[in-house]
Image 1 (cartoon, rainbow, N blue to C red):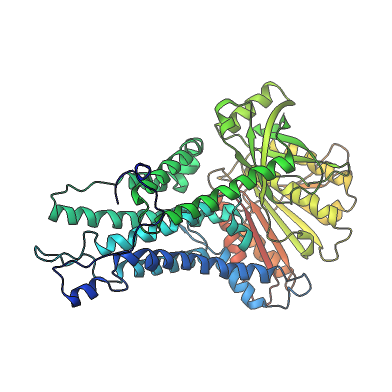
Image 2: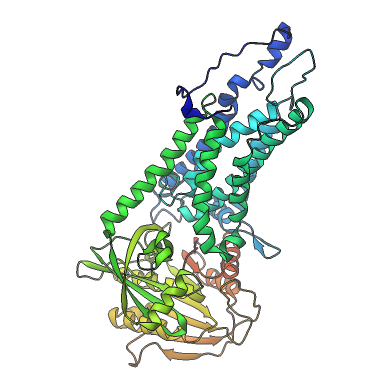
Length: 579
């Protein structure tokens, strides 16, 4: 397993012919060639077993996704209600341990299942080391190192597939790419553990046999360790610009060293071909789709808003090029080094304006790096135009139309308030033809009261455009600046909102816009959701939240608990990860 592959004749698969050592008898040779121990079949035993586990999991969730798409608003209330509630409970319920949020129960169950399967594959077969002696040699590669290496290699195509924004797993299962990132991270952790288990037995073996004069092909594993450590959630969020700049480079170096390390052993090259296919083909598809849908370059207009936010407007030819709740990756060509990376932003508008064009609106809360530069440009030159490239749209709600629910509850925190505007307009545009929806309640929380001004202006516009808006939509704005309220990094406050608020007209013209019911203090989201589900018992409710992690966790817990309430109707939850 050494050398440089391109200096010799290329053979994609190495030979499987292995001769038993002359110093082993027939029984010992049979032991060496056992199903779980034979080196020349390890790729088929452990590599394919790993692939089968991943493919079986993907197939299972693809079937669930296909069945869910057959449900209509009329039969959703009677088809598999208990099973659907149990499934959603597993998808929504999570925990906070030491300030760190766990994945939902269902995700942890799936990760735990994978851990058990791979631990059994790695630790179950015996022996871990060959019983070599000065007169007998079963082989130089410790069996536990062999099987852990093949398992790690077999994970590579799935690791790369899970990292792509456009990928086959999303196409088959309906799970958007941002929700697959937790699996991408944990597969990386699993590969790191397997890589270490692959490495240390060689160190032990060579220390005993050759005085540590082993080739030390461990460079690949240092890159693995760096990739997994630097991708840890808190570090990634804190140093996002640095993460974006280094992650792809480190990943490329890792794959190259991994390829050299494998050196065409048995069927190892097949996994690299598969990895390239599942990553590069969707990547090219995403680029081509972005060019076809949005063109090579669009112009984005930057407008400063009160509270330090920035409104980005991009005029797009055509309509229906995105759905409410989706996000795009935007590349700003005029920002120097930042032009090399695309940043995600939630779309806060509907994809139609009745004139054959669509205005894509993005609201940005500056947080450093690229967003800080955008804010500076907008402040120095309001209304300036910059060249951008757009990739997407991705993600979105699992349901295509929120107006099919009886009740909709939209929750926004901090910069997530703008995310609700596109959903409100989409519901209002459909409501004349919708027979189900009865009310839309919007609950917002922000420490900065100036942000209420630009949000109120948008509500005023919606109130003028849609006559039914005032009867259908109720908006409550919670100002938390005087309490330990909403923060971009968390949601720690426990103080309930005041019951006494000010009703503020969202526009300058009385009666023209929607009203904002302004309250002080943090909203009690668990009590709010519980009250709504009890009040509308037996009816369907959609809950959508976009805000800090703590706010999302509160809503997750309340939505999960609602699945267990007797007599409650359908409670659907969507958590938006971008803003």
